[in-house]
Amino acid sequence: MRTLTTYRLLFILFVLAVFSACISDDPEKESPGADLSVGDALPAFQVTMNDGSTIRTSDLLGDVSVVVLFSVDCGDCRLELPEIQRLWDLELGVPIVLIARENTKEQIEAFWQQARLTMPYSPQSDRQVYSLFATSRVPRIYVSDAQGIICFSHADDAMPSAEQLVDEIKTLLIK
Image 1 (spheres, rainbow, N blue to C red):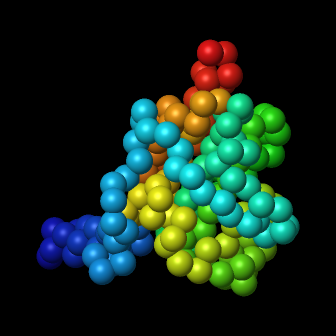
Image 2: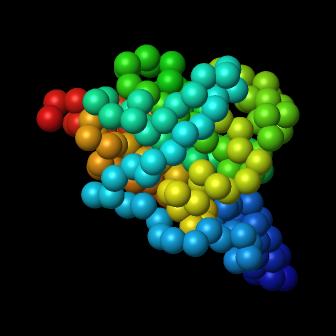
């Protein structure tokens, strides 16, 4: 009897883990193209941030930069965004650009207030910008060098801590 209860508990935990993560997307919403990876150049993009400023790929060239793709509907993103806030709070002097996937400003603001986040972000109601970087899955983090070449890439699983991202950034700043 005890073994059966243990198996049921493990099954419930497994189901919760599978459905709370953002491992896969609706196949009909997957973007065409391929996921960017280490060695690829940042794509040409332009986003408007929640403070009204505009960021373009060309603004990131000349600096090490971090691009974060997220959705506040994603459990993994909700876990990773506070790590990105910790990175932001360190004020390392590198651009950190947060780009939403299919989230309105109102949706993001609700989570930002709940989680006490202060970083600027770009709300995107569709996947137009996201599709330049990836076909599916969030969160995604791209750390690129001053030439806009992706040197570190993180997607959905084994997401980095703020400390790991600092180490990656420092590696590129030393080059």
